[in-house]
Image (cartoon, rainbow, N blue to C red):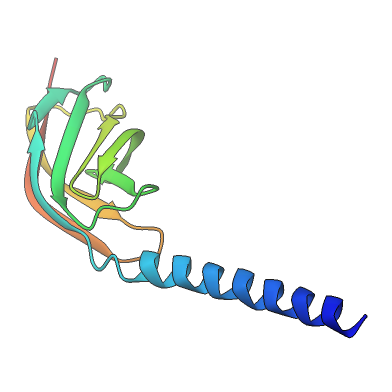
Length: 119
């Protein structure tokens, strides 16, 4: 009976250590860094598939362009994600900041990186 309890405790400790290691690995990702967005322009109607490259990009990163959510599309690696631009009404071609935020709240902004084109 005592051996069974010891084995259960060992299994519990192993599970907790595994969870802790996963959390530590995610926390160790670091602050995201945006190096490029491609293409760097698109219609004010939205729907442009953009690819953001950089470093430390989270699997569940959130992306905003000019304060408008860019719908997460794919996570390729910690260095590349893509999203589909949302609609943003502009009276003339206007360039906006691109911001990525990881699930831990760390973020980076690439200033004047995407132009919504007036159509």
